[in-house]
Length: 265
Length: 224
Image (cartoon, rainbow over all chains, first blue to last red):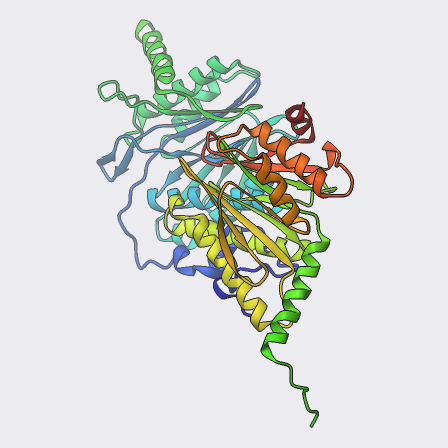
């Protein structure tokens, strides 16, 4: 049976890659996932992403600076992406492949949801992302490392979770908080000192902003709030209402209060 | 060597068309009605999980009647086409027209080249800022662009007349739902209960993904 434009697109029964978008892409447009690159290339990297759970959900926030070596290449970079209505992925590492991974991952989740008529479980999403990180290993070996941080809310179990990854595709669930990126270490120290169980939302946002501030304080590749240009960290809240990004005005207000607290100290 | 009896091409095509039509007319119908914010699909469907209407892409929905396994295959193929295209170009480059053409090509070549045609009839809808595009694709690949409303399936003719009588441009969603239900009830032998209706559609006031599906409770509330 020949099927005109749909040739190769009709699903086979018991196709094990059935609802997977990345597997489909590999079959139909392998060039899109071309991994072979000769030698190391200069690339954009450096980031801090923090995620922490609070009473009603999870917060994931990221700075906005992109660097290439000692050059600041972009000041308003987006590093936290909506994966689907209930989860977000924060990326650190080589900007190009990382953003591509976030885009394919979001398409992957939507594709699954449409084909199967319902969303993946939160753990299923995290496992899929781990596979994508693992598939990136050849590029990671050439210097284009991508290390995401995944946070989401599971509406079936009413619980928020955070997943950390390593460059080889290892997946680690975190109950409280996690960080990634060049400033991740400093942010982790800050979170460790300030994190409390079952914080309310505003307090949790402050803890995230403090952690980003501390990271930007120590790491030149992480940007602090840019008061002159009005560029603030991107803060995402995911709870039983789903994914939403805080307005710049709200983040700006929280940032100002964090700054004034520090000035007094 | 066995001799094949001569059958004229006209006869072959007619037999296939009859076969496909018979298969489709056994199934229940779907009605699509344009309303002020988009398009609404209403179907008689005893199953709450085996859908006839589903989301393809941001602004595009799909509805089908006929053999479930066949239109399910086509539905998934459409999602694949749309997602790959939207990934490789941009989300705005995925259009209902391209998808409808792909379906028309697929059904057309299956109709002429394979031993058995698809026993399906499809609708592809896309909402734009102002208008709704509604494509109707038949089992043999013929495609038409519909205006305002359309019914597909066994009792399509009676339904089209019924809906046509009550349809007005820019009607509200609940009014469109009531019209569709009354028409389905009138076209079938028995009036249908609210719980057996599958109601979904595209609403241009929603965010990126315009597709929505009404639960049984939503349907009951809307019908009042």
